Image 1 (cartoon, helix red, strand yellow):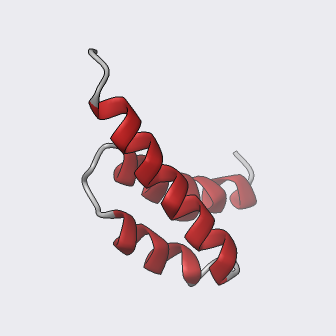
Image 2: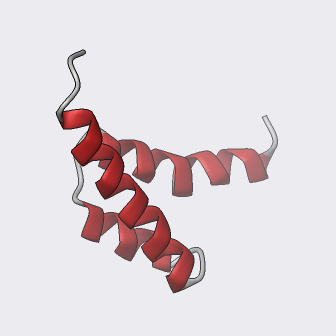
Image 3: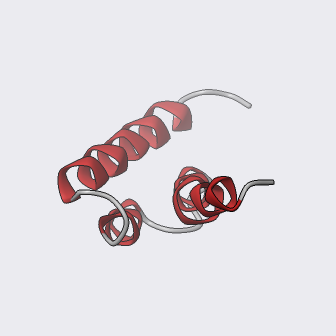
Length: 61
């Protein structure tokens, strides 16, 4: 696997997954992402994760 793909998965996709699985909070996710991507995008991703978590809580597995 290409090194850039590994970095993308480990540094961006994995923290988003952890937030969706509620292993880390959305504020912590935003802080992690701010180190890698512009703050306004990190904020948008964190808010989107928060909304997704709230919507999925009401659904059955």
